[in-house]
Image (tube, rainbow, N blue to C red; front, top):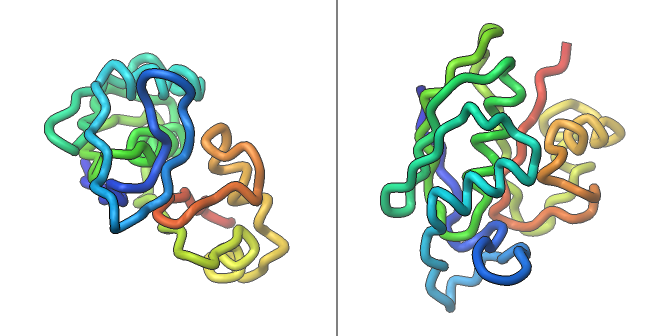
Length: 156
């Protein structure tokens, strides 16, 4: 079980109309949290398991259920947390495989996948590993934004 923090004012806007990324702007109030149904639809859109149950309490998403592996668990946490209006994800997701503690990175202004790979993986040239680990949430390596939380895969 874990509790993960996210930037409430940054993330994918869900709801009526086209979903788009919202970037943190302290001069504006954070958007209202989306419904559990909207977050479940986002998980479905990203091809994440339907076995994960979603509830929303205030600005916290609660995920329960089971998944096949730690990577899927981490993707579900990130998909739910990288939504505008969500400040935290509390999860009790069981995985068939053993789950090591996940490593997440919150994108700061000026970050690139290259810089993040240098910091966490020792070489900027390994940025495709981070990009692949965050698909389908990421669709292009240059499309990250401040406040977004990325999964850093284990290197063996």
